[in-house]
Image (tube, rainbow, N blue to C red; front, side):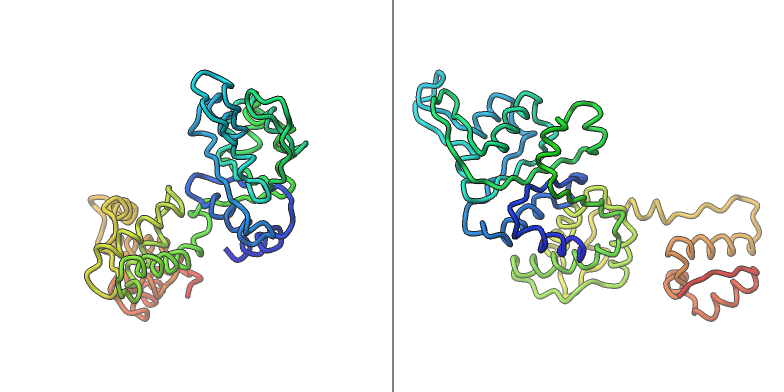
Length: 304
């Protein structure tokens, strides 16, 4: 998060186009809005277009607008998003879902900062910074021809990659605390924080829905929490079920008590990154007891 904030603060004051890529739910639109809010264009419009949600013809109309009478049903002139974003920022989300034909028209509009409305005779000049995003893997999209290389290179003056939340677990708790403050204020709750077992669950879960899933989980917890601290009882059933499956340890029938104990201790220790203090809490023993048992196993583990 700190590195991302530094990038945003460095890039935002410029007019450089920015290309953001990352899995769904990693916060691409939030980054685009931050770039806009910290730029000299902050007082002007931020216009977002979801390229995956609209068919080709409708998307082009949404981007460039149309003149009155341009087609049946065009009873009035309609400005497009490029025009509406004049002086501000145009955010093109899921640009990899845009047809190649529309990509070609978009490229010209970006390069020339001019375009014609559908049915129009005169070019309209605009000054819009373009920030684009995709959840596709860029190299693969270029190789398959899904994303035009000329458009990509025009947009990626600065490129920002948003790794999935499972690859940056140290960001989970700061984000959770941010959402806790936000939703406590929204719902008028006086919630002080999270219990230690809740924090452990948050940090060990793999978050397939990324920041969006974490945000929803914290909002749900704030809504249903009856006290001052959010506990594992406030977690969605899906997360609890997944974590129970992950934390399950299989001990073969026929194992000796010593073998079963050793397997339980070592797998618990491995599940918490060899953190002895945390493993001891989970196992319900003192750290000294755990240390003695590990010594008896003739096992040396670097831990805390």
